Image: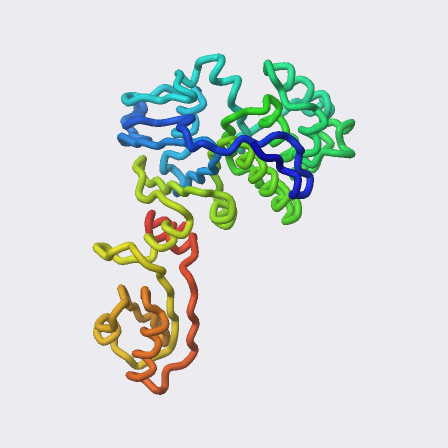
Length: 324
């Protein structure tokens, strides 16, 4: 046991060391709709205690379907779904979950404090009212009607309601939409605190920076199947390799103006791809320093050099082919 005390706005409560035990799973799940559309195709996913899992994918990839199955709002065509070892529709299992949906709504003529107290009443062991207000950053607006709040304030109220039951498993669907930078960072900090207390968070977001910052594990799905799964660093590395290339090592992206032909660049040890776009060439390499030395030896006029680590956005586009 340890206690979170060294972070801003931290709630001083005992923190169990995360054990990594499975709290939710999709086991070879297929979801086929009556119109013949296959939203999920034998997809398997396990969520473990004390981690943030970011579920990424282009529109229509199956993210929402996967979340609805885990919430018990839909049933699979085949395969098994479980949370805390039970059917997601089980009342006791549901009492241990919290949900914040992107399309969430709340009665506009109820005050913030009334919403919180109402939701706390749904759970056998709710989070303390004062802690909810603190975690969600609602101090000073508890007496305001929901309909009078700004978009960002409404998001923070919906976040508060997701935490009202002090859940062990939290589904967050685009949680920071409409938040300013300060509020977004504050919510990130609170999500990290939840995980430090052994909670599990399934995050869907279009802010790839958010997934990169928060998630211990990223799962990328496309057309109902998992196309990549790993830590943010692993996913970025995988997304920066060409088919058939080994995935070990640290990939770097070199962009420069050079007269070296692509076939010569591909002969340099560590280089996995080389493409020309106008006056500039982009090289992917696992040995950036030695690659640069070789290139400078071959082309003394080499200039406009830019060396970067791959971004999650680059990996996402490479893995899904989603250029929208």
